[in-house]
Image 1 (tube, rainbow, N blue to C red):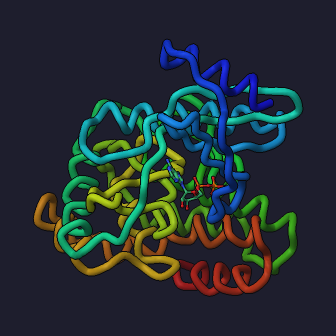
Image 2 (image 1 turned 180 degrees about the vertical axis):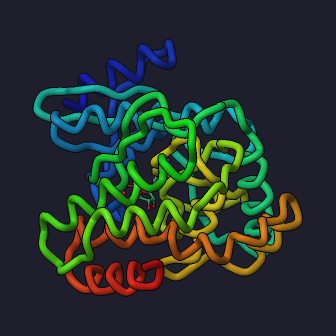
Length: 286
Ligand code: ADP
């Protein structure tokens, strides 16, 4: 497998590359991560079973599109594919350090700049991708309430109901979600889609980076809402974001609604207490 990956890297960079050293990188939830190097260059590689190749294809496309916005640093993808029984993605290696408050303020400003990148007239994306390892449906949809209700809450709640968990009636929930969003019709922004603190970091030079996206064109508020889950981001991040592009007053009300998606997904991925958390959040909107 490593020879094949080295060959693909050589092709991508137009120079010879061989894997001289390889070490495991921990921290991923879904894939096996590695640092590979030839003594001069280092790359970050994520590996999974061959059947997961579409997940890496979508990750590469998401990183490429985010990179092209020239707004916030993301690891630049090099190549991806199948080698033997495995699938893989190779990207630029980044050395992470501890960001200070300036880095986090910049993270907020740069994310706002990415959200200002509005090139789509509908909500959705070029292909489906994954959120964690759960499929994420991105069928192009004109109306934001329809998109979020059906392809975000509807999709996850159907999965969750199959796992049990005593969730309320699907139709009742979907009506309530649609109702809450009403005629809220933001401009589609390029969003990261899975922006919890594990997917945001700073380089040793203090440059903010976002990684491991579940990209699509959606309401920018979905990214902000998710940053408040699972530990939250440091205060300077919000200061930076709001200075660059203040949030709409209705954000506070939509935040809970948007985060139901991620808590349902966590129930679908990990089970346990996420089911009752999702239920509590759903009760609030019914
Ligand atoms: P997974 O898809 O399995 O969740 P991640 O993309 O979140 O994996 O990466 C796992 C960990 O690997 C990250 O938390 C980070 O520490 C490290 N990492 C991710 N991307 C890079 C990179 N481009 N360069 C160096 N380390 C990285």
